Image 1 (cartoon, rainbow, N blue to C red):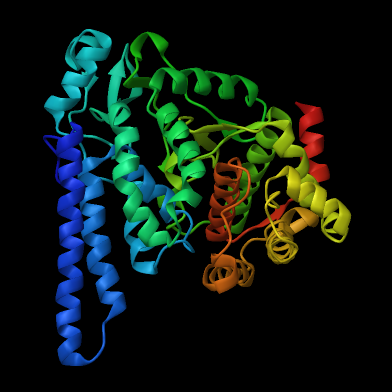
Image 2 (tube, one colour; image 1 turned 90 degrees about the vertical axis):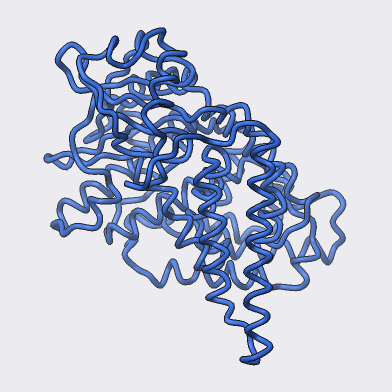
Length: 440
């Protein structure tokens, strides 16, 4: 575990100062590397990216909250950033510098009215896991092991200002214009504000545990409302290994197939039956026990899927619909992919690009079974992303697509990546998850 932090910059001025200092470090890296280039004749872009990624991640780790969460979100889409950034930011999914125990005690006291030793039979002063929004401590309550999730100070209050401060970095790294990214940053802001509200997470966790209790091979902790608050969430401890660690070890094909199919069925049940989903599918949110059951431990980020998005989205997922130009145009208009201001040339350019992209991304659900161990499929996705990001004509276009695409697509890509790491074949046909909805 990384060295503990005994303070987090909370005020707007202090947090802004941290962003400015980071910008100065990045500027210094550019100066250093371009000075070298004057001697060597060329810039080592990979080394420059590594230095910048290290300095930016170090600052985001100190700031925590939405700043670090952005690194986590970006790391899940390996095609958005240069490799050095995505590799470094991936650390945000699994570990971050934990908060010191005095600050943890203070947060628990302000939320629950007493210090940890006055509430719990025992309470570990060291965090078991530290992530972007908070950290988890192991404790005992009435003889039973529990997990106590403690939010970092100032996380909720700093989200709006953090996003404004981080915006220049995002624009630079992703190479997009401010006016294009604003509607989507609003969606991210809303979700981050929800994620910082542990009372809302408690409500969502209880709801999911109830609605999904019959999904095969999935288990949930029991939540303890009387020992939870706006910045503290207490639940029973699920024994096992985090999925990220589990995937690094050798396991039988049967075990990997079971975990992969469980994940797929769990998500399809959420999307097609509940019309909402746990929209943060990174491996740190799952625990695998000795019986290879999937424990789900985080419902901070939940995306509700409105019918006016769900219906056109899944119509387009069928390959036969993508062959019908009239249907495609109507559905693209519904999903804000084709805009009223588009010229005939722009409409054609966008249509061709999105049809190819959707046909590729929706490939798994057009077959009864799909082999996610096939790296060629993911290489196709990354190559298409490269082509799109570098196309001079596409760069001129206004950003488009419903705001619901952000978390919906991120959920699918997060799930796809986990299944790829598991190296499994999945029964994916829509008829199978329609049966799930009837059964439950």
